[in-house]
Length: 345
Image (tube, one colour):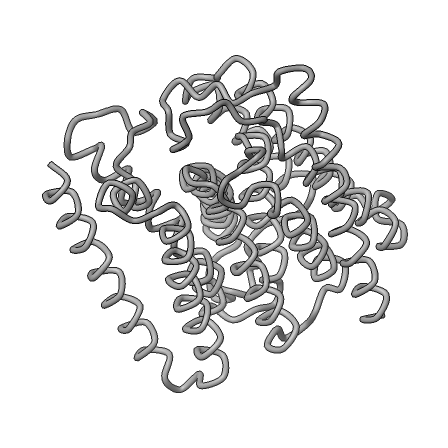
């Protein structure tokens, strides 16, 4: 089984590479170029967009051929449908630019499809003593918020060539490790999908690495975040309460950046959905970091949080210490961002 998954991983990686090359050629001919009105991407030249289509196609083609009867399973069929909704939202946003409310409606529609149709929700095993009604409300709220937050978080850090892809690859590898070695029960279909998603992004990365020849666009960033959110919740079936923290730790970089951005805009009376150039990667660029240095720095931070997630499984008796370490790192990041903001003014 593992050898079959490994072969599928290589095939999906190669397929993603080929599809991205084809998409890049088509995008240049059709002039499907980046049209970000907020200039979030730090490139002055026009770059091909809609790169997420290659990731979407390679991932789902690989999944359908690797996982027996994938789409005959009601849950996985609706996961597929929900991901199509996200893809459409991303394509429309890359084409005509949706406003924050329109984009939110699209993401929430897909998230509700996951909850009500795909059976993706936080398991009652996490809080066995809670009443069914209370947990149903709590589970629905937590699932929708988690999917919405992660989907947007990846989109927000997609501001430097290769950043969102690199952080996502490290995070997915960590989630694969924690799922395979530490889960109480392994759901092979979802583990396989995590591995294939990693391969799909990896095949795209050479074209997106500094200097990028093609961007993920909202098409890709929303899809990657959405799939990570969905698959990470799926892996929490029959898990312990602490397991809720692990996907957050692993994806801490985009989640922290998104949370900090929302807090910053709220405190300065700006619309929470308004794009700006105050994310961590923007501040590092203004401070003098090159694009490559910014990406490598964010990868290192992601690796640190990923190691904390792994160590918390290896040494469960010291989980409080790992959480304290996480808090200290977050405080350091907040202080650093504030200092960078002051020095850039």
